[in-house]
Length: 110
Length: 118
Image 1 (cartoon, helix red, strand yellow):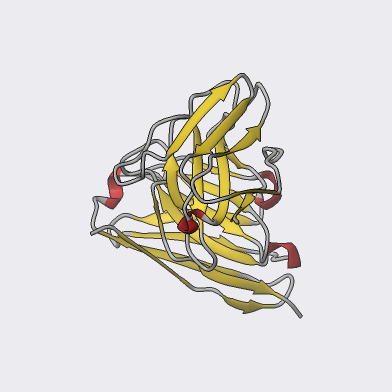
Image 2 (image 1 turned 90 degrees about the vertical axis):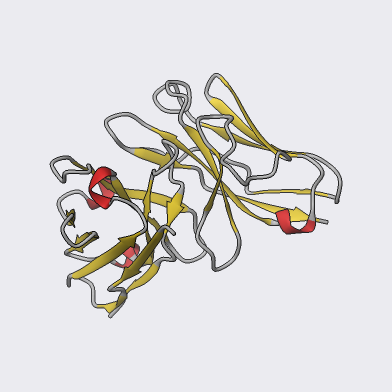
């Protein structure tokens, strides 16, 4: 049950695109199509942005997209906006009905 | 609308116990598995526990096995987390969450803060 690996921080200017990586193992990220991504603003509960590796819940902007290759998943945000500034967490099913999160990435919109 | 409301947090001494509750509304509680997820101050999210819709299956992160017990009362639409032998490292905001529409955590409560300190 080791945490998934994310960069501590990323930044981008308004209108640009950024990508956040999430690296796991063949026992979690690489084995199941169950990677999800969460956005969390300070003092707020997390919000689901991507599920099942690349699907968007209803109401989430199509500027958010997910992908996966092997043991690494990625979240891409295009057309960066000021309100995208937040912490982002990846999460994966990890077998035996357990789940594991990444350490989180702080996104700064310059 | 779907609501998950946690309660029961507070300040507790190391080694003592605390029980958290999560009252839900807006969906058929007995149909869905439920989770607890925690977040230490300034730190990332950590999945803590899962309980099946009927309460018969329970799973935990290694760090709380033997100390925490997840349970539910489907007649009262309420989820619980009994936390025993609390440690300083259990200090966190505890969220209840579920998977109503997707296989991932799509609905969350607002969280309740547990502080373990002497």
